[in-house]
Amino acid sequence: MELTITSISDSGKVVQQVRGKRYARDGKLFFQYEEPESEMGRVTALLRIEPEGKKAIRLLRQGGIKSEQQFRSGERLPGYYDTPHGRMEMDTFTRKLKVHMKDGLEQLRWEYELFMGGERVGSYRLDIGIRAAGPAEA
Image (tube, rainbow, N blue to C red; front, side):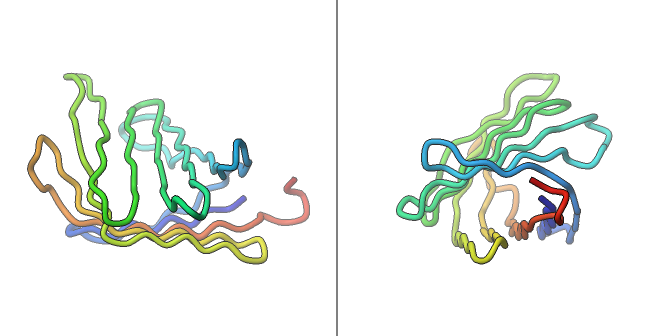
């Protein structure tokens, strides 16, 4: 699978293209991919998409950093970000969340407010386009 990840925040826009794996388990859809190498080192991200009725996304990151964020439209949900100095609690309030799947193309889009230690730190929008990489991909 090829993922195009567009992140838009108060500080600008970042577009990344990565390759990953797609699989389903217990009625949930998963996408696993390596984030581009950064000063944080190697990071593996796992997106978990809840079934249509629940419409929720969970993002786990492991490696050079560890974090968890949860997104469900209209809800403020807890998460965390582990740093060398300890764990920071964070919350996300999701304003909009859209999951569209059709003909081998998945499109995820969500907009949220991020809170750390109870204080709002910014507004974000993530657009993730996912498609099969080609005939060699299983």
